[in-house]
Length: 137
Image (cartoon, rainbow, N blue to C red; front, side, top):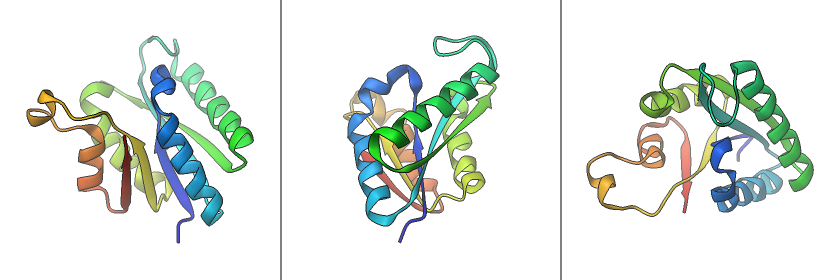
């Protein structure tokens, strides 16, 4: 049913992604699918990496570690954005096409007041994606 599952990750907040990571790996095992972990960062130095190349290496290392730990095929994809805060949704939607993903599994937070003003990234991706999306709280 699914061959490539895209999993957006924020390497600065991996500790908050466990439920989504576990859900994605369970689905990948069930369908013998490949997980594609996608991260988006700015080209400027940040808390996770100082350069796009360093960020790409950290994404590749994260994917390899997740693949080994969870027993699934995994790839990492690092994308650079001028402003990840404002460009995250369109960058992730474009990544769906680039990766050939047929499912997106992504973490979300419990909705709060600001979600009535600004939609969540998970909600926006689920609404606009050309493939199925699972938002995990």
